[in-house]
Image (cartoon, rainbow, N blue to C red; front, side, top):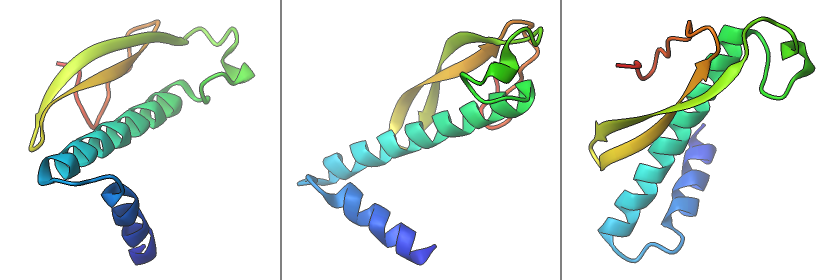
Length: 97
């Protein structure tokens, strides 16, 4: 884990010249990480991965995204919350409302 952390820190440090640059990279990293977690949550809810044939005729499919703005230490971040057709998906990491 320590090697992964060091690698990530080095990657984030590339092209950073100011503290603001670092904060922007961390904001992007936060947003991308949350997006991946949300996608994993809907995969788990529906029982299949995105674009998997298992979802064909399953009765409940992905149905786009809703926008949500969350306040973070790095400022406001726009997220895309996945939706399902039946409206039963309730994200755990970032709630809908």
